[in-house]
Length: 312
Image 1: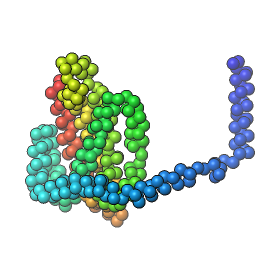
Image 2 (image 1 turned 30 degrees about the vertical axis):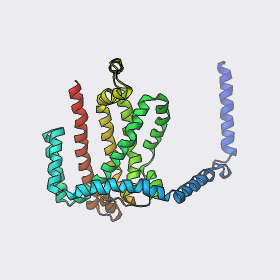
Image 3 (image 1 turned 60 degrees about the vertical axis):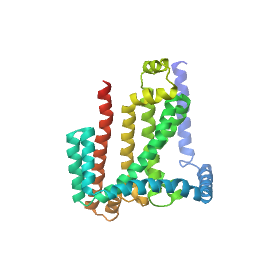
Image 4 (image 1 turned 45 degrees about the horizontal axis):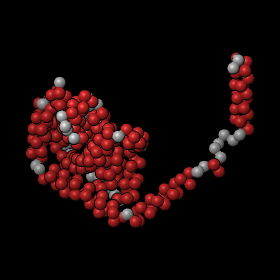
């Protein structure tokens, strides 16, 4: 198209836009809005699920979560004397990450005990550990399946994108509506928020395994399951451990949000500090979460790092 013709076309477009800007309403017509047509069926379906699925969510979701987080983790963590727990973490940190991390862990946990945060930290860890186990139980198989099936991975990718970009407060809505207030909905919301890194990095870790190594294992007669368990998962373990690390970090990040629906722990200190304008209380609660996050981060990172060193 010649230059003068392009000028005529763009001029016509500009004049049309000016006419529309002056004579057409600047506000979107109310009659065109279809918000109610979308939210109405969603609310109706949610009400139906709440009425007809109450017993299912109590028996199949809430009771197992409470057993895992309260009966198993909380009871064990609160049963241990504070000095024994600090010593145990110090030994684990020394064995896994070295003397510097061990000293930092012992000093941090001791300081938290002096600040009166030890019991709250144990409640927080019980929620984080329970949510992490559930997230790994969901994310690891889905990540393996995504690594083995490109079509499934292409379907799963936009779902994970939406889960990771959705505001964390949104996850509280279905959790509270289906399970009420307390620990169980907090764990469910935390799992939904924290599971995407586990899926993504498990998928990535298995896909990064050298195809020649996989072919060699198959050539020696290994089955697909044997290749997965003895070749792909061990060689992809550093990346998978990075996914576990990110899952735990995101679970800790959800602690403060979960405190809004009745989850006890360090998050409730931050929430009460905001609600009562008590800056010191909120700061100490946040400091406790940060120290726990750093300790767990350093220990879990060391597992993947040591694996890389052994491979090289």
